[in-house]
Image (cartoon, rainbow, N blue to C red):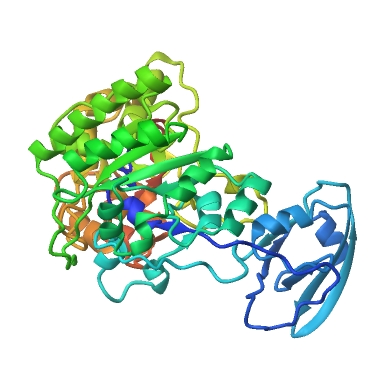
Length: 498
C-alpha cells in the first residue's frame, strides 16, 4: 500500500503471458554445446559446504545436463537434482567437464543459476491494443519490451498467459507435474470480443485450455483488463455470468482497469470515468453476491484502482478471500489499512501471503516483478525534521486519510509528497511505475522541511528505477536522506519512527 497500488491497472500488462512444454533430452545423451536450441544457465553462486561445492562446481560454470538430461527450465532441473547420485555436465572455460556428486535424496544441490528458462521463452503472438508494452517509450532497457506467453513463467513468477499458444503437450506437463497456480488472462468470454482484444483469431477458442486445466484440478487465477467501450459494461456482465456458469472452479478472477500512457497509439484506448468505474463495480459486486450463492465464494475481485477512480471505499478483508491477487493491485489498500490497525492494537501478524511458487525452487533466480529490491534501512540515517513519504497519485489518495494514525505510531510528523508520473503520463498513477527522473524532479522542487524521504521499493529493480536511474543518483538531489522500504505498514512505521 505504501507502494501506492504497486501493480494496479498497468502492472498486469507488464508481466504478460505464458507457455511451452519443457521436454528434456533422452537420458544418456550428451547435448551438443551451442546447438542453438539451448542457452545454458550460468552458475552465479555456489553455497559453501553444499554438495555442489564439495564436488567442485564453481561460479561461471555453464550447466549443460544432469544425469544425461539437458533440463529446459528450472522446474525440470529441480526434479533432476532431487536424485541422490548425480553426473552433472558443465562447460568450464569452453571445455566440457563432468562432475560426480553424491548427496541425500532431496538435498539441495547448493547452486543458484542465472535464469529459470534454459530454452527459448515462448513469446506472445497476440497484439493486444491495451498491452502496456506497446505503450512504453523508446529507449528503455530491452528486456521491458519482451512479451512472453510462457506458462512456465506463469507458474514461476505469476505472469499472465492468454493460452493462445498452449498445446496438449503443455497441458499434459502441467497436470503431470502439478504446475500450479497458473495465471490466465480472460478479458472476455465472448469469442469475438476476446479475439478482437487479443487481435488473434486463436483468442476466440483458447479458453478451452482453461476448461482443461480446471477439469484436472489445476489451480488457476484469472484476470480481466477492463477497457471502456470494449469489454466493460454489458460485456463484463456477460463475462461474469459465463465464468460462474462454465469456470466456477477457478480460484479467483481479478478485474483491473485499463492503464493508458501518453505513448498509447490505440484509437480505442481510454481510461474509465468515475461514473463508468462505479457502474462496473456495481456489476462486479452483483456477481460477487451471485457467486457466493451458487458456488460459496465471491470469486470476482476488483482492483483498488477501480475503487479509487469511482470514489468508493475498498471492501473489508474477507471480500478478498485470502488476497490471492494482492500483487495484481487487488486488496493492497485493505491489507495495509488492516495491518495498520493490528499495529495500533499490538497484535500485528504477517500480512497476505505472496502468491507464486518460484520461491520453493532454490535455483530460480530472483527476477521478475517479485524480485527483492533493496535492503530495508533502519531509521538511524534520518535527520531532524518530518518524514516524507514519496509516492504516486494513487498512493497519496490512499495514505492521506490515515496519515495521522501513522504519525501516532511513529511518533513523528509525516507528510506525503505526491509525484505525478510525467514519464509515462496518461492515467499512470501507481508508485510501482515511478521513475528516477520524476522522483528527482519532485525532490528538487520540494521546499518544505524534511528529515527523511521514504520511497516504496516496488519502484525499483535492485537499486535502479525503470528509467535506469540508480537510487543513489536520485538520493543525491534530495534535501534529506532517501531510503526505500517494503510496501507494508510495519516497514513504513519502522523506517520513519523517531
